[in-house]
Amino acid sequence: MKYVNAKDILPESLLSQIRQYYQGGYLYIPKENAHQTGQLTEYKLELNMRNQYIYLKHLEGQTCRELGNIYHLSGSSIRRILAKERIRHLKMKTLIEQLLPLWGIKNRQLSQIYPTAWEVNHNCVIKVYDDAVQLERNIRLSSILSECKIPVAQIIPTKAGEAYAAQENLFFLMTKKLPGSNISDLKDLEMTRKMGCAIARLHRAFLQCEKEIAFWDNGLLAEMRGWVFENLQQNEWQSISEPEYAKAVEALESCYDRLPKQLIHRDVHFGNFLFFEGDLSGYIDFDLSQRNIRIFDLGYFLSGLLAEETADAFTKNEWLSTVGAVLAGYESLQPLSKEEKAALPCVMECIEILFVAYFSGIKDTKHADDACRIFHFLQGCKRELSAAIHQKPL
Image (tube, rainbow, N blue to C red; front, side):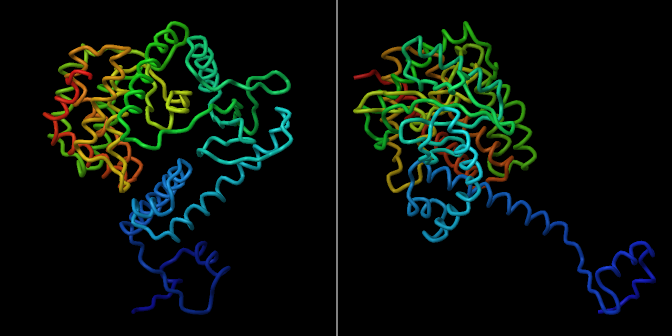
């Protein structure tokens, strides 16, 4: 290695600064490897995102063993990740404890049930928002749904009569805890039929909400042509090929104008629909509600069931039976048009492409690969899926 006198190559101002830290000896300055630095940054982002999902799934009830099997990590590694994530959320817990007297609550038994939600004394839930406009819209939405006899969480005002509290540019909403829990047996066809009924009942009530509140008018086709395309292109079509994307968008475009559009939930899964003693007891989490094609909620829910990677994951035949049960429940209250039934497989494919684009955009390769796997599964069973969608209910 050849040594060079710093005085011969560095400006005096910079050399003067370096002397404040080191002088009179040899100083090795390694070459900068920009590619390696970028890789390390992306890898760290992926790890952070993975750890956040592990924490979320743990809050939803998955065990360390189940999480270890999904992410190919040891039980001790999962526990270590969960411990670090709990420390990250400790500051918010402390802030909530300081705010509870605003509701006249002295006992402070808090347990986190979601990254932005905490159970208080086993009978209330406090949720944290960073957008007051969204919060006030959700409050109004809950009020209308309640008037439509839809079971939603009742808001608990502060002692001062305010609907929510504000602190440090954050907003805190307290509600009564709804009875019931998430369905644990996802393969129970009677329960999935009831889930279809629950989605239809909510859709009917949403029609009333649209008359009184302005909502974001979104569209799956616009998303597919916009940011979804841009993210996939930026990722150089590594997961979904450009011809696969183009074929799915062309199929959606051919029927899109004939698909009914209305306010939808946009985040339909068993975690947001509560059941008690076999019956629906409540709906939660309307943060993503928007105007879109009606069957988006059905497609989102049905394709989402395939994301389970536990030992109890769906086989193809089990999932197809579930598709039939959900749609039978939905149509018992809200008939689907023939155009909707024909478009549902394509809509599910587009939803999974959307997830591939989203997770690729935030460098979460694990979930991008999962969505890609589901997309190709859907492509491989189009005929069976169409038969399940069109079967006559028993």
